[in-house]
Amino acid sequence: MINVPKGTKDVLPNQSYKWQFVENTAREVARVFNLSEIRTPVLEYTELFKRGVGETTDVVNKEMYTFEDKGGRSVTLKPEGTAGAARLFIENGLASSPMPVKTYYITPAFRYERPQAGRLREFHQFGIEIFGSKAYETDAEVIFAASSFLNKLGVKSRLEINSIGCKTCRAEYNRALKNYFAPHLNDMCASCRSRYDKNPLRMLDCKEDCCKKFTKDAPAITDYLCEECAGHFDGVKKLLSEQDLKYTVNPRIVRGLDYYSKTVFEFVTDAIGAQGTVCGGGRYDGLIEELGGAPMPAIGFAAGIERLLILMENTDAPFPDEDKPLIYIAGLDEKSRAAAFGAVTQLRLKGVRAELDHMSRSVKAQFKYADKLGVKYVAAIGENELSSGEVNIKNMKDGTQEKVKLENIYAYLTAKEKI
Ligand code: HAM
Image: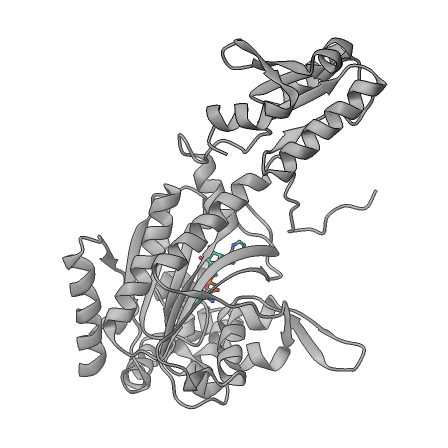
């Protein structure tokens, strides 16, 4: 037997309504925040992620699905959505649209990580990216969009925010980090030793135990912010507080991707073991320029749908009921099966979710099947019904029955139900 690839998952027919609920909620949040959908290819040229996400990150160094296509080009399955969105923005000249350009996406993403609860090799993100605004109001708006999405799903998490400054304040902070780490360097992992030269900030994100004991007492970026970055961060905090959105400042949040500047944030839970971050994002004012566009501020987030589903499963009423067929119409013999087919087809053409037998079942077995499907109404057509032109419609919930003319089934159902 050939199995699903390690770290990937199927979505089964009786589970997909949960995904649809999360995706519909994402689209509804995007609608009220006035975001428009973008779709980018699953494949991009590898260079995009090397330059965009950054060569000192684990994502680029260790986790990308990169291969040569038959034309000899190096391509990579997208490990996240931001770099592709930025490429789309530049390539399609969106800089000449009215600003800001407010976008969202729902996408698969691929990272070659060690699979565990909440960590997959193919996972899915709902993300938003807003291009063109440097105002701190936009940071607050993006954080509110994330929070509103999580609230609508009933997911409980805490919001942690930080500012990692701009090029100016980062230069001074990097010096402070280097001074701090220098005496410990020999006891740290090989990746951190190379990060020390290339991007010391990334050392704070190291997951190795030998490094964690040093990173915990490292200087905090918030003590090194320049006036502009500190003012921007104060503005974000003020707006969050004014709208009663609770947060804590966690100066240890640096995020695992290189493009960030100024505000970064994560929504975190303790409920899925080590994989507690359900949503992460931040400002990335340098990325568009890094990828060859004109300087352009931008900010966004992405939430992991699989992690959200795990959290939702643990709440009391995580999903609305699965959508079930409203009516099942049984045909008792050859002729009445054709009549049942006609009745069900007419109902479907009018927008009613209706079902009938496909397996030549006996009448008894058809009723059992209808029950398993969880339909609300059942009707059976036999010789008598064909000659009288009337069927008995039984309400499976309360057991009541009513005689209805065959051609009036739709009218009957619409009188009883919202269709
Ligand atoms: P990220 O923190 O790498 O950020 O990923 C965002 C979310 O995707 C995580 O919080 C997590 O819920 C989910 N996620 C990441 N890796 C996995 C995995 N292996 N398995 C399951 N879920 C996972 C980004 O991707 C940025 N592009 C977010 C962003 C958008 N920043 C600005 N705009």
